[in-house]
Length: 217
Image 1 (cartoon, rainbow, N blue to C red):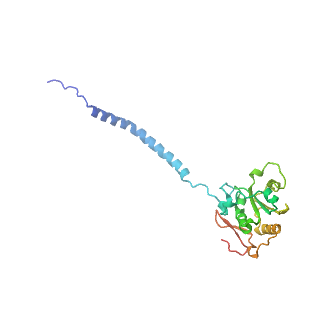
Image 2: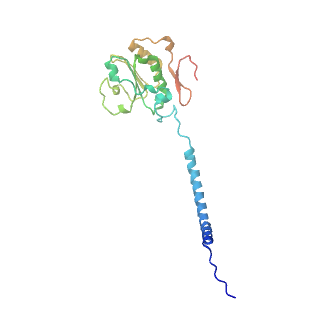
Image 3: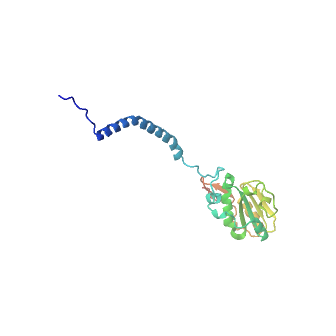
């Protein structure tokens, strides 16, 4: 009997066997890579899923235009006129110095908006960020830097003849500002609008100006 001949393995079977061998070698590596990927995902997921820092009245973070965010009135900035223009035209100017990343300025924003509502075109309301005023020379009475004392918020009311009728910082009462504006313009504020001097926060994002007898939210 003739000895058995060596059998030639078909190319398909050879390829199939080789693939099984390669899979057997690669499987532990794939498993390790999968475990590593899962570990990285678990580390990164909390960072991705964490909610962004929210705007709030009580912090000194930059959230954007504070008048749009905290007073619902983005029309206040940029101001429609400059201090030099107001004085040249003999108009009453109310200059408000503020910073967008200042909690005190955020809380005061509704008062500035209320001034616009009460006085309209009778005065030039000029809210100014103080960054451009720092570390530069004072160019005289028409320059806002001439009146800024380094505080935010700070309110300066100037009559058309350049007299300073109010210069106060912090949460200045609306009634005090209205009194100075009335003196400067000669316009008496109606009784119904008096006594509205307090700013009250009713959530993280908003505050409003309420009268002394008004209900607080």
